[in-house]
Image 1 (cartoon, rainbow over the protein chains, first blue to last red):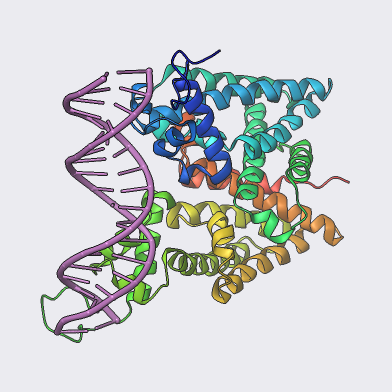
Image 2 (tube, protein in one colour):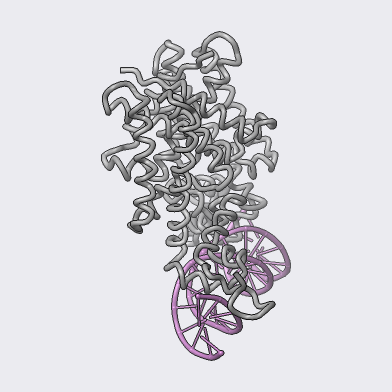
Length: 203
Length: 203
DNA sequence: GTCTATAAATAGATAGAC
DNA sequence: GTCTATCTATTTATAGAC
């Protein structure tokens, strides 16, 4: 566990790559994607601003690694919350809206980053695979919850995601806290679950 | 209409302030808020990068003027679309979801900017008033459309805004065009209207 | 693999001439 | 009210030493 070299030197890091991804999450969660930079991530882990470029071709490739990990974490948490919600398929899908609100509040990275055009264009298999894992899970839950017919399931899925992401975005931008100062992440998450549960797809 | 001074000189602008706001809209619509800068807006209208600071204290004050105008434009278009939708209160409210999708696609500025924490903190009466005009209109439409009881109307309003903003955000980030390349602004706007129309608020 | 040093952009903002 | 010039800060990314 001790770094390979002597005492007070900065950092040698068995795994700088992992540390940079984690530092990036922290920066994005705290100050938003706009204020994220490779340089800040490097400083946060105590290495020079040049070091990240040994592990990531450029800024977007670092972000793609963050996005891929976010998609996997999100899928894991959604599956866990769906299972904790019981057996009612409608309730299982709705639960993931709460997962999503809480996840983005904690980690700062959501669908807008995971599926953003600039990162998708990199065609990183890791990110593409993680994104698929997330959408596959959600589609599975929506199909079980929806009215028969896969077109209706897709519409339900779209509205579910739009609802969850709408709550996330407005929460992130301060829309809720401006007008309802007592709003907490958990209360917004609960409202997102309620909104998703009440979704209907009419003919 | 001719500028007060002679021929080929750059720009004298009877109203640089207005021109900067309009240029900012264009920049944000084209490349997103992240790539907006005071310097770019100045270059777009053909003045030096110092000139904007005669009209706006800083970057955020320019953005606040943009946000205030957006709120007014949005409220105007929503009222027009609601009126065009007829007399059914539910249909009138739903129509504004389409207005919102189309407006942000065209102008780039939405609720996340209009009600963003950094701009709200400036306490600019112009922006605060424009924001109120927008929320007052929406509340009026939601109250007419909702089930009796103002708590239910507020929930309906929240879900309506969340739906509209969710569609806007995912559209902006390319989420829809990645998976459904044939999606257009109008088709997404139509789906947002449908989703809003189908909203219900259960006990 | 990490560091130092550096290059090249770009931005926000100010001072002072006109 | 606009311009020129400038300062300061920051970022992305590379070159080359260790």
